[in-house]
Length: 295
Image (cartoon, rainbow, N blue to C red):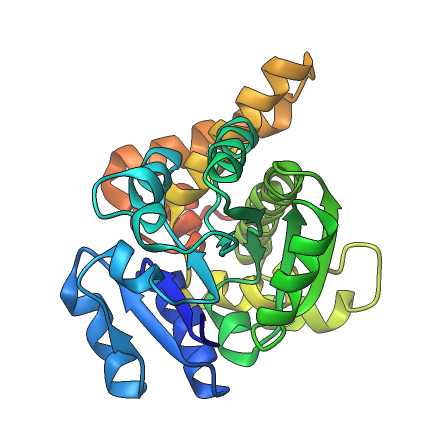
């Protein structure tokens, strides 16, 4: 086994993680079903693999960055999957955002094959991956999480073990509830400020340090105001995560009325063809003629 790290999934987020690893000197071998997604990483210095099994062969650890639990399962336990090529004792770090129950099952199945599993979903998106400042919430055995944290030190500035397998994914769902509601609140406030004639560009500065301040306010209110829709995330991914939060709420008998409304608005935007757009496109929900204030 070498110091090589394997990356399975080189989409927008996986590609950003891979680029950061390569840039900071990590030997990286990468596999994606779409060869075009691998090309930029290969140009940067990574090695392309013919399958997930080939990527995992001789790798110290395997990072997964995929879109759904069934895709993670296929990539690891399917034909030519990670489990086929990985040596016993290999660490699998799942940076996908999937549901906690699926994660527990995946971790158990990995353990049965002598593989270690850490769920390590992230917050911060592509911009924070590029600067090595991701926030990671992790689940797994203490020694496995410690090994994962050492491997991911170049991509993350905040890593926290939350408990056993699935605890990281549970924490990510809580993160997404807060983010989903935060994006909606800032978009709505932007629309009100515009309609009332306040200089929206001044609001983040005016509120900085107060109780209403947040990373979302500082980053996204200017983007909402300028209709800057460049893609650093996807609305339909938020739908997936809020659906996961709803599933967990049902399982735990937790009432979440605001989250339910937030999810419905995201579903409406997805149905309108905006699912692939960034959260900044939430402003389309508030589109309409400006109305003069009542005298």
